[in-house]
Length: 275
Image 1 (spheres, one colour):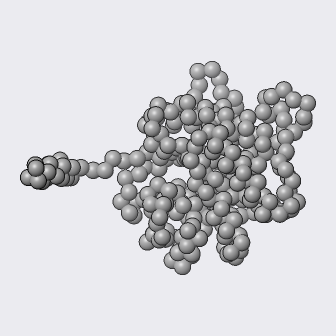
Image 2 (cartoon, helix red, strand yellow):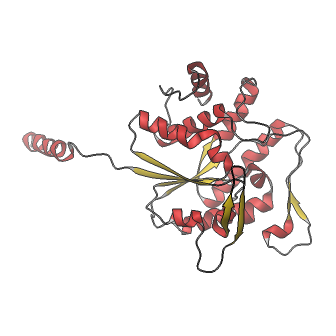
Image 3 (spheres, one colour):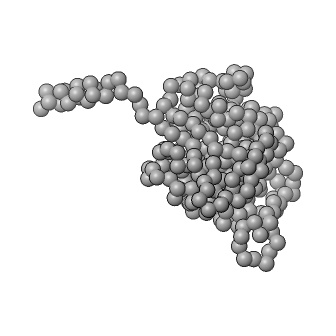
């Protein structure tokens, strides 16, 4: 019996020797909060530096909601914006084409935080769009993940509103609005509740970036993770990439010897923040 077991183990070792690990395909779908300051490039470099067989692709355009990714054709694009028109019958948007281009293992979806803060927009636009994206994916084992973005940069008290007619729902209201938020703590809690609601209703996973940004604002306020328009700085982009690296490779990772174009001490401080 023992001899049979030894032969079995030897056969397994020989049959798997030299085989390359299967590459995973990961797609990010979002807007400028996804790609600003080079987050995808940082993530690709981290994966390359550690020989991880993970391919990163991105379908992200300025100001695009998840609904727009399925509804609007891009006519032209500049560095800071896009011009679109409604999709006609028989057409596919750029993101729809990307979704159908291969067998995706993981799809990471990013929505503007303001849309998460407004209950009606969250329910009738974001959540419905996520379900529609899931229906377009052929791989039944595809893992869907929500990119939990940070609280918008602004002054308090704050409240965000959205024109009601843009949701194409019968209503007497002129607009839908978020709750009024008196301070950062209230904004963080409300945004967290919104993201949790989306995850539960659509049955997707989430990378909790909002919590890390909130922690940084409280503990390391001198670190500028985003600019006045709420776009990530290089520090923010590196931190986002590191959080996604941990999600994709090793959630218990304590440090990574890749610092990109950041000073080593800055990169290590950001890595420490992610714990």
